[in-house]
Length: 98
Image (cartoon, rainbow, N blue to C red; front, side, top):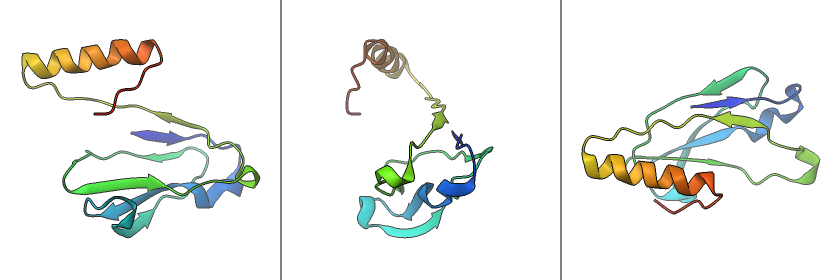
C-alpha cells in the first residue's frame, strides 16, 4: 500500500505505473496512478504475474514524497524467520534483494 503525499497537483505525472506481465519495465503499461495529494493505491504483489514501476524523475519534478506500508504473509516458520531477519537488517539500513 502506498500513500502519495505531494503538497499540490503539480506532480500529477510521476505516479506509479502498472504493467501487464512480469517482463519488468518492458512489460505493457496498463495504468499510471496520478500523483496527487491524499491519494494512493494498494494491491497484492505477485512476483510472476505483475510489475509496477515509477518513471525516472528530474530535479524539476521535485521530491516524490510517499508513505509505503508493506505487509508480508508468513505461512510457515521458515518464512516467518526470513521476514524477521530482513526486518532487522532494514533497521540497520541494509536492504537485501528478495
